[in-house]
Structures are given as structure tokens and as C-alpha cells.
Amino acid sequence: MDDDYDDALIKALETVRPVRGYWTGGADRALEERCNAKMVLEAAGHQVGVLQSRVDGEDPPDCEGLVDGQWCGIEVTELVDRETLKASMKGLKQHPDGSGGMYLNWTKEQLVGELQDRIRRKDKAPNGGPYNRYFLVIVTDEFMLTSDVVGAYLKGAVFQAELITDVVLGLSYEPSPTPSDRPGGNPIFRLPLARR
Image (cartoon, rainbow, N blue to C red):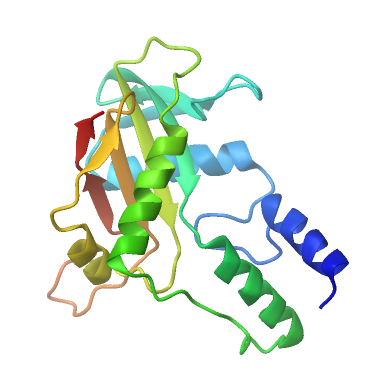
């Protein structure tokens, strides 16, 4: 493929993906952020009221609202390996039957490092507020990041933040292994934080 095509593909990925993911792909990014935040926080056991988006240019945070009766700021981000996504999009264009899709087989070091990097990049003084709590919601649809893999990789990990008070990682839907096991749903992981 030529460089012009690569540049156009990257630009398209930065706006709206031509293929919808579990968490992304809609044209209304603000609505997507509010919905993802509400879904993940409720799955983590929080009581979430109506969330409102911040006006463009007034973020962070992406949205704000009542969580557990407290006024909170909420940043939302997606965990995705951009290089693998780019290669997969190229492969799918060449193989419309779906055989060109690619997946990253994440290592523990990659996952923990990338999560810490997301926290570091989002750990900025919020506009608005004051907030009782400042959440970072991370969503991912990475195929190889199942609840079993993520649970094993996060065992013993502690993340650093200065302003963010809570980090919740939400995975895409997983069905129940058997009807007698836990019900299907979105696996959720609360990431333990230490102050920098």
C-alpha cells in the first residue's frame, strides 16, 4: 500500500471507524462517552445519575454527573493497540470476507504499561467542578483481553495517579461459560491507585 492510503486510513481511524466496535464507532462521540461511562460505572456497582457532556474545549473531563450521590468528573478513553488496528483495517479492506483481521496477543507488561500510560495522559487538572471524585473509565474491545487474561495480568499491579481518584476498566460483553455460572455481562476491573 502507498503512503497516501496509510495517511488517509490513520485519519479515518482518528475520527469514525468504518467498522463499529463494541464500545465505539458511532458518529456522536459525546453520547458514546456518556453511555460507556454509565454502563461501566453501573457494572462496577455505582449508582449513576444523568451524565452531561462537557462543551468542546472545556474538557477534561469528558462528562460529569452524580455518581453515588457525589458530583463527579469522568474521563473516558479506549484501550486499543493502534498499530494492530491499522493493520487489521488494511487486511479487512483486502479481504472483505473477514479473514484479514488481526489481533494483538497482549503480554502482562504491555497491558500494565499501556494502562499506566492512559492514566498518566488523562491525569490532568479538570475544568469545571469542583468534583468529589474524578473517574477514568477505560473501555476495550481487544479480542485477546478476556476477563481471565486481564484478571491474571492485573494481579498485584498498582497504578500511579495524582488527580484521578478511581479507574475502572470495562471489557466487552462475555457470555456466561455455563448457565449455572455467573451471568454474562461486561467484566469490570477496578484498578488500584497509589498517589504520585
